[in-house]
Image 1 (cartoon, rainbow, N blue to C red):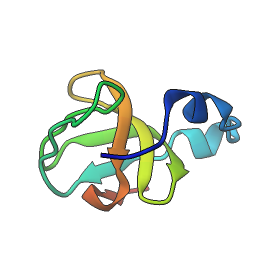
Image 2: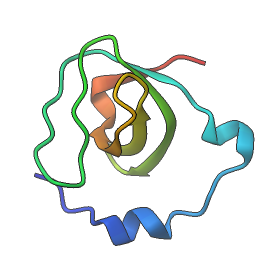
Image 3: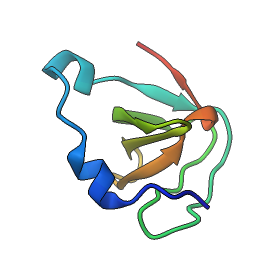
Image 4: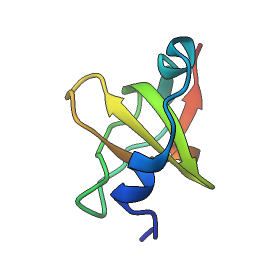
Length: 79
């Protein structure tokens, strides 16, 4: 379980438009462990990803349209 709250997510300043379109691909399946996390499957595309803190990101799973926090070591940068 992680200690980052949604208030910390909201405090992150918005990056320039090009950085907000960062695309990642899931390397493994991940089942959300908390209400502010998002589940995804191996191979899913994660869009609008932003780093939150060490080891965590916030992004949207393109397949489901759901957004939330996810472990950064479960995804790889694509673009």
